[in-house]
Length: 436
Image (cartoon, rainbow, N blue to C red; front, side, top):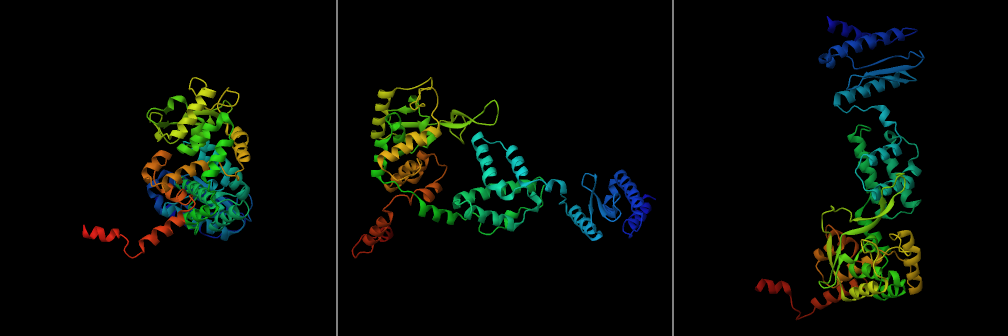
């Protein structure tokens, strides 16, 4: 008996209405909804979607449907055709198991980005980076656009805007596109949108293009420039720059070096701490400076051990004799007033820029000292695995992409090597192996 009544309701749903009959149809639809809820096993044989005149405005049409949780939803349109299109769309989603709540898709892209970052377990420094990406490249372009409205062309225009308007490097564009696509994947997994438009963007974040661009714009420091910079550095922090150029330390790692990390007798340096500006504060808005275990390693891990060259050891001994150590951690490089940790905001204008200026060295980032270290080791024939370990890289891929090309003169080495081989009477390692 219930099935016969429901079939009658189905006929009523799909019969065109005129005048004031829209309200009675809505009442019948609610009756059908109650019947559907009471007998969910029959849900596949009854209407899950239907169209009726709007209760508030008889000139408009409303699409009704039941979501997968059997909650009634509705949306009003200007024309019956629009309402029918919506009904068919929801019917397809329900049949395919790809149902989406339209209200979630109306959220601003920026709001979904914040949801995505908030649900992830991120270091404060990484959270600051994501907030910066939002403020500088996502919100200025997409503004209040809803996430469901974004198409492939919108993402392509965003990439072009970052390149032409913001003048971002290929590496930065690839990184931000990767983060944005990850956010879109999360939105798909959480049924906010039905598809990720980034998946169909052609040539986005080309790794090869990034490497070519970096090769063309890389700042190569010569040994003369490095020594001039070290000699011109303020005496209190000269040894810190020696650690970056002679041991390959990152800036935060060099600022965090303590006396306990240096083993002069074994000629080694233990790298397991760094100075970061990602500590917690009471307000939660700004990050506090702190000395913590190096990123991406558990607290109990020993960090990495780096060879300590004699000239770097000499500079460290001289620094300790002249300036001593500071605090219970016995730091070598506290701030200039010896009241706390050294801030990067002080290092760049007061230490780094001063050293470049007095040394008459063309501007480059302090990280160039680390690149100098890695490229010199590779040029000297030190195995890639060892170089990667000493520099704290998880694999040798980074070395091949960012260090091999930094050293000037590599092309001449290649020409000389081939010219030597392509000479009558030259030793041929291939023939030697065959004879063996």
